[in-house]
Image (cartoon, rainbow, N blue to C red; front, top):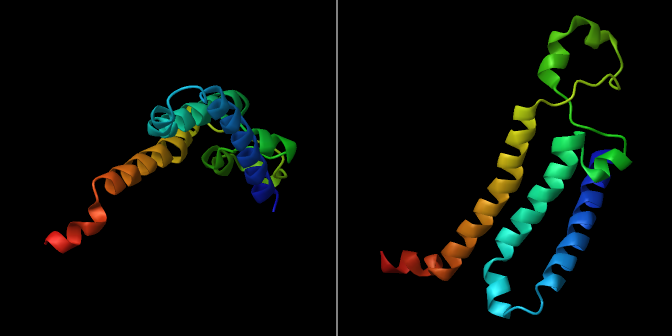
Length: 130
């Protein structure tokens, strides 16, 4: 339950920052902002990731819930760690944090771009042409 609460808190922080960012671009041409909206969201998510997970090891919502990412591989190989409570942390490595950004953030951006590409090129009617 705490992980879900942390995820909701992170989503709210992101929504607040996204609305402020889009409000900053409100004076630009409307079509232009809509065309780069996935990149704006990507930059915002990467900034949040850099300031939270990369530097601190946990998102803002996770820190409010006293949660953090843990290196389970290192924890399972340490015989002393098996006897310690779960509060004994093994922080996530740099490669684990980088893979999180690659899969969760950049993967989400790639999917949104692919979805937009399929909609603009009318792939829904492609089956009719076969």
